[in-house]
Amino acid sequence: MASDCVFCKIAAGESDGRVLYHDERVTAFWDIHPVAPVHILIVPNKHISSVNAMSEEDEALVGHLVYVAKLIAKEQGVDQEGYRLSINTGPNAGQSVFHIHVHLLAGRSLPIHIG
Ligand code: AMP
Ligand code: ZN
Image 1 (spheres, helix red, strand yellow):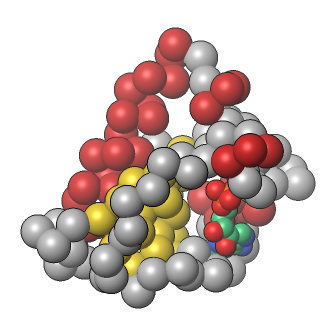
Image 2 (image 1 turned 90 degrees about the vertical axis):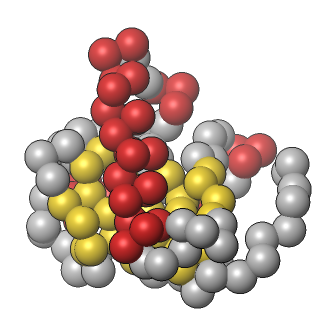
């Protein structure tokens, strides 16, 4: 755990995140500044600063983030209408929290974009 990392603290239950899923590998919680009716972040409990910092041994863990996103999409009732999963990496993508996270966005039409 990185002691100054807000997502590490939420995953460890040491901060006021609105957690809706937790297992031994990942934690999911509501984004504090939602940009869609459903805006949930899924993070590994282990600190990985970004996709750039992933090692080969993290492959299954990052795959689990996507799998849990799928379970949550179904639980939130948005799996059929659709949702977006995104991982911002680095300055040009606007990454602001340097603990890898998958955004799950749903509940409204999400315009197709590439940037
Ligand atoms: P990104 O731009 O991909 O790094 O996104 C970081 C996201 O984390 C933003 O959508 C923020 O609103 C969200 N965020 C930052 N701090 C918190 C927090 N303490 N609890 C929940 N979400 C947060
Ligand atoms: Zn962290």
